[in-house]
Length: 149
Image (cartoon, rainbow, N blue to C red; front, side, top):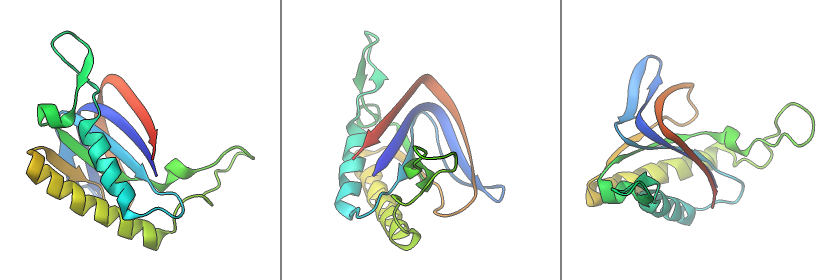
């Protein structure tokens, strides 16, 4: 599982000119599933993202999390994160999970993230799996991390 995490002032996702997910300040997380992933990785990813300390405290140090500040997380599926360009110029996606299983995993992630959002009093939004999405964001920092779980 590969995650690209961006700290944002706001972010949104549209499909066919319809807003399907948005957050104000928080994290935009692109999610790509590799082969042989399971739902346990989703649990780990959600906990990691909610507790990732990449927001500044009163002393200017990255010491606060989404959970600490009650911010938002926008989760967007993106299989191209698993693209391999080591050979040639066209990405190979042989390491990306097959669409049917990836859809099941992403839907599980959305269900779990929604539950955590309610419990932790944070906001949450989602993209749509296997759709042509337009993602808009305003980076904060910018701060971008790549996490391989």
